Length: 306
Ligand code: NAD
Ligand code: UD1
Image (tube, rainbow, N blue to C red):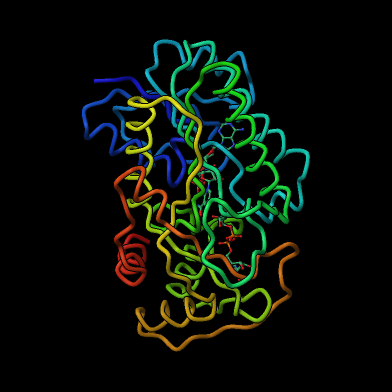
């Protein structure tokens, strides 16, 4: 049994990870400021420290006695990074540096952290692998790329093993349907269930690689095992290798719900990526894991959980 810290553990992805760590018999300490996460997401067996991940002194205390860290705390919304550049930067990059520093102080314990497909920006209609030159088009993407760079430094200078997971578009139960800053699937599913029309930003032809949350958790756990076996600094895609347009997504959700699709087209979001599709090959080779849940099967579970 090990003790793992999960930053952002009360959030969507983090709370699923906590469930799996507990199921494997580990002890879990969560550091979360509950800004977008919820106490109700958390299993009562997890210890919860409510606080700011960019508070370096608090982070150091939170990491005492830990065997490893999963760093997921961030302001996950690209739209919010457009609106609140300074605030999201403080959390998204400042928080990562505080976490890496805390891991150094705790004895160079391994850190598996959430990066993002947003670091790639627009690369055209290609299946992107990790060798692509990053071109983030938003503050959110720039801070995730900055996090990857600091994670390299953490290993090179301080011996802290790091593995960055470039999540593509994650979906599943507990992605907050109430927040306008949530992921498109939770927003669309909740609106369809309530009989409300959808707004598609732009022409709806932009594409995303949607990956189910439990598949993501399996990558995170395998990533920690790899770092424990072979300390290194590495980044890899967490994706399916299948692209879906936002318009097709809307149609599929309406069909599954058995309702006619009511929608309108609004302004495209500034900095919105046109095509996003990941190559999962490196993760499969390195972690021995691949995403297996189909979009439709995942959507059914997500809609049922609303
Ligand atoms: P989420 O908003 O549900 O989870 C983020 C958690 O971090 C929340 O519980 C929130 O309360 C907490 N948090 C935010 N600011 C904090 C702060 N200053 N101090 C402490 N805690 C703070 O979002 P999520 O979708 O679960 O995202 C988890 C991670 O994965 C984030 O780093 C996000 O950027 C990344 N990511 C998500 C996706 C996706 O599609 N959901 C894709 C790529 C990357
Ligand atoms: C998402 C994640 C981000 C992650 C990135 C990785 C969230 C909130 N954001 O960003 O953390 O790093 O994937 O690829 O989980 N859209 C509409 N109508 C809506 C809402 C969205 O048309 O009501 C469109 C958006 O303009 C965008 C697409 O749907 O083109 C996806 O949007 P969103 O779910 O916010 O995700 P990303 O911006 O891709």
